Image (tube, rainbow, N blue to C red):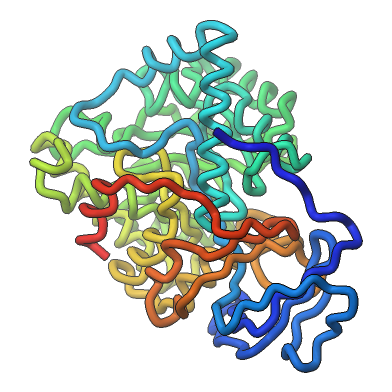
Length: 438
């Protein structure tokens, strides 16, 4: 289970020396034999090791390892572990049972806290949660920030807003039966000091009952608009689960700030992205097993595999079009879905390279500084530069040569605190099957 975490002392000085530094900027190249000096939680110097002010520092000699910003996962569900499933679960019934009494809620909260620890120990130092159990995400966020839990920086939505029969309704989203009920949920998010609002506008791969119908529109456009208007009045950004072209159009016309997943684009949709200043959070990971695995492995039905491939191709096509037309693209991996674990965000970078065709440096830049900018936290994290929090990871090989170098960080540094040799227990079946598509 997640353990209480200490925090770096305000005046503690630590110098990471003899490192190859990748700073997170676009087009980054290794800064060879550099030192990064940290005081308390913040970076105070980045310089060649021979020139750095190391007075009073505890020295951590990285001996040529690669030091880079901690990764930022923009699409996380902390309530799931990603364990493969042989058949679909009734998530609504499961969550109802889990949240039924104080004891089961306490156990569930500890699991959510443990999943947050796994994110951090895998090298993800900031996450954006987009649908969870009750107010667990904001509670873990606050306990982590206070040093009581080992957890990344969290931007939390808590429960999303869906509709009866809609995506994740009754589990990690509230089923709003009317616009007033949906607006009331925005007020609940405000009362819990959430960071953003999440809408479930369409269905998903596993919701569809027929071939060719993933991402069926579930939420009335008037509800989308009403929630966006209220959220924006209160200073919230709105993220929207969307897996169809129609859904993307409705979401953007309603005023959402980010499209989560995406779908095959049209000229109208790309124009709406630009007009609104919205961004696309691409999530290749969750569709890949349903689209590309043999059904004997994924345990998907013929309909689920067909629709999974449709969503997979739509996400990739949307990502390519967005990049071609200057629409910002963020990276998340929809962790919690079957086959998508809390420690495997690095795979999303590799898929971004392989299927969308970006360079390794751009994939790494997207998962660090660009994600930080799109999340609105680039003033404190996302790159290795003076004045920012020391959110960093150490890996043995150069990820610009092979992004698989990110699989097992040697060290994680979060808010200035060193986590040496982080502990992540991996699922061998998940590794074996997903490694075939690297």
